[in-house]
Length: 176
Image 1: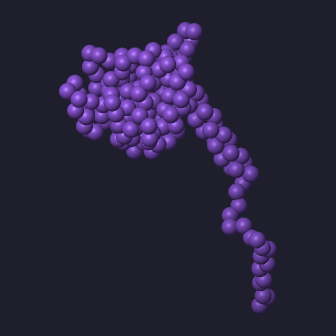
Image 2: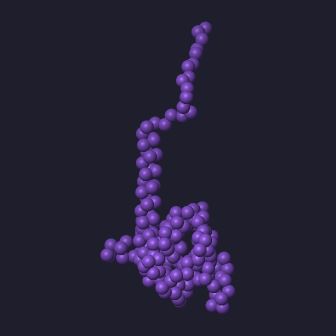
């Protein structure tokens, strides 16, 4: 009986990836990166538009940068309270603002962002807005209710456009 010899050359690959398959993986990764960049730019445009009545022009980039950091990392918690407003906001406004961003980043059960993440960010960034009329802090569970409304809302929940991304602001609706 003839002997069979097997020759291995080292280093010997553990697996082989078809070049076409690898190209598809690379293309998918590139399209995901492009979509993420578009999503962040879309949120930045929204923040510039919606917050222009509340944040001083010279503070806007710092304000946006912090919220975009949260948009890119749901575990991010700011260490400094934002207190410099040119117009009064309340907890409803910041909850609606965070909901409008998080829903575009993936908010919900089994998704990346949760109401818990948003409430924690709000508590860290806007604690002075999260109080009752008598000055008592709002409960964490209250802050997790991101879509609750009141008669004093100035920022409303902005449901995503048909693409799941666009905001209902003039520049994204093609009105500017």
